[in-house]
Image (cartoon, rainbow, N blue to C red; front, side, top):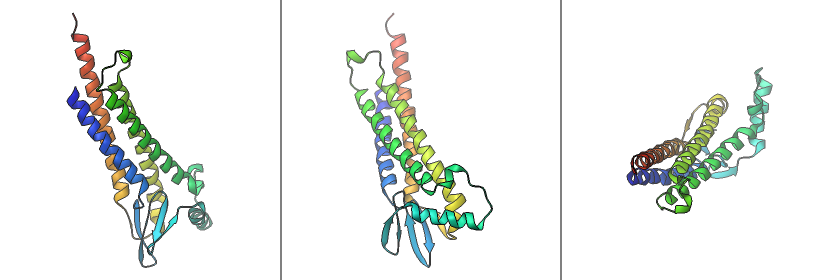
Length: 197
């Protein structure tokens, strides 16, 4: 049981670090713009060695251009240029917070308090890690969908970069942390049921 919790705690700590680094850095997408390389993250974009904050005016001018030059009907989610930035940011932050809460519950699951006999902390930690996985999956799916369908078409030579990849690795780490803690919970339940006769 403790080996599952230790493995889960290790995966969760690594996953939480990756979530924070992925959310904070500016290398989600790299592209060539006017002959020079540029990159962008969730908070800033950088061109020619200078970084600028992601604002509504940058992306909204792109969507105004798209509406003027195409006859496509945009869904309400993507009509507002900042909606997908805000959704991706919010889900990444919620994912890091729920992973951190799972880490706290995971650490507390090593302690045996008689006051918490009916509340299994390893089960709660596993649920928090699965919630974290869901949030990071939503964030990555939103960013991937918008980038491939809208922003990727704007730039001819573009690619996802290492911050984006760290987000997917964090998804795997939080998922495996949840699996480990659920296995620890099942082992604890089997021992509890089979123990006193």
